[in-house]
Length: 271
Length: 268
Image (cartoon, rainbow over all chains, first blue to last red; front, side, top):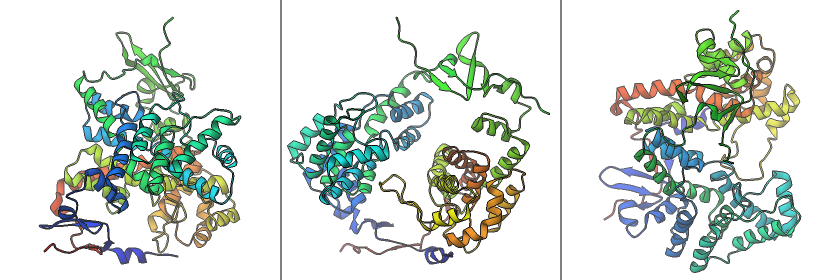
């Protein structure tokens, strides 16, 4: 039995190198004084430092900011996470609750944060296996067979992803378009388009962003954490719009819009 | 020809509109039962809850089992992480929804939380009531090849890595549930608890008992995770309200509890 020893050892005793607040003096973040050491750093730089413990240069920061700016801010309340922010608005809930809940549901599988981590993980796994002499077509085939899909390729609504071109343009401008993981991401697309798969799957933005992050050395979990606030720019307009319009009017559904296909009508008899 | 309107499909819920407003329901049917015309006043809350999840009325044994489970889970107490999270909201005057969202977020986890219950259910689904299969699973848990939003488990699901022995509330809940007359996982767990604990290297936890109960209610891992998440919310709610009343001066801050090992020191 392991027992409660770890609890005894940590009772009123949390040892950390991440940081702390000191009254009158300010805060320390990963060994640096927030007021003194971060004066030149942007918010993006501070966030990346908080997540990774590393300071990135100007070009890298432009790339990371571009990943958020170009790829994740669609102010459309039909998109599920944005719709939560908008529903919170139309139901007259608070902005914080709406944006928090919308962010939480962005941790989904077919888009959002699970796709984010699965995508970069796959690129790292493939890269490692290729270095061990495996063949990319075989790797893609295995991924499709074992996991019934391949994260970062294909799209539920439309085949081609319109975000690829502007993001790639920024990466090219910054000199990041030729990294090993970018080449791998497009090589996977070539395999998916050239072979006789059940579906022809184009690369989507999740694979491109994961490849860019991998080329910058972010680990799977660092990249996942970095992406968590990325949709906020699309959520706020949806919430505000719903607040500004008549309450309760965002996509109202009449009773007959529920199509019931369950058990037939019956009586609840109490014995 | 106009495009057909998009609709919500449901096996659970049907509504009939009021004559004067298609957006207001005159009658609501849950799995065929008229909720406000028939169920209301006749069904117990637990029976209705079971109906929502399963689409059928529970047997008396199933209703009893779910009621005991609901009571056992409803307040994990103020030391527990999800309730603690809700109290952090309450003491600061956060919205009530935020307090419950905090409880859900923390209580979703893999140490005593809802995802642990789902993982424990996976063991039941893989091993059933086969003790050697449980031993094999606990000693050699499957390893996921891919990274995920959920971290790998750090202890056997359904067991308490910090426990010295199986706590009395866990034992009593298991005994009460096993005595409901629903033959299945709970009785087997009650009988084999000591053997499983010896293999796991730690005592059975409430999450493990809940997982067995969910199996006996024939819930799948998604249903079990959902049910466990919100069966524990009442405790979070009342403790958040309580701490709001007490105020921040009477809530632990752990003022001397933090040791920073990488302090650059006071600037000169």
